[in-house]
Length: 289
Image (cartoon, rainbow, N blue to C red):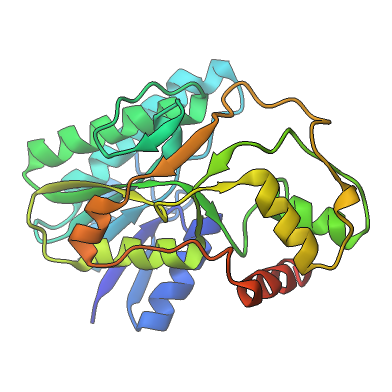
């Protein structure tokens, strides 16, 4: 039976990953930091030895709560990554979830696009990706860095755009928004976890692969907000565009070039927002939370 270890299972993507593993009939093990000290190489090795996984999917990356914690957090985080790669079986594949935040600039990004992160999260992810590559090379093991673009879906934080928008509209409340002219590559979480599992279990052509995980198409945020309001039969006048400033790192265009992902897997996620039935189902899912 296929055995998958998930690190970062308590998060939004992690919970969907556990469900997807169950649906596929895989045995899924979680490495919980409260029970396994990932900064201890011996503890990490013991945990992975007992499981003997086919793949490890590393999703976790909580942001430090303040600047003073940043250096200590980063050091511990990188040590955890190295320990997992060092301890996993030679036949195991390591999958690391990178982020579009690594790029830090507007554009349609390929895997080798220049990275210049302009947020703490993007910086952490960039440094972690470099450490993953170095550790895989040093240990002569196989891995994939999957850079995730705008993941959304059941379980995401209420403060994020789509759930906060739906919640406000459901309560007939005005929604304060930026100008909404940004283009984003939104990718549904069910598609993301399926991609990650397919990458984890596919026979590798290269020891280390890098691929963008998105739909390859962008949607203007303003247009998405309007579509959701229409799906909920709510007046567009509740959408108050331009009443909030953009964040400093809110780039104009963030879209994945997914040509490499399509080459590897022969498929990639699609933009679901043109499907009215999907939008209605999405609204129903969020309103039931």
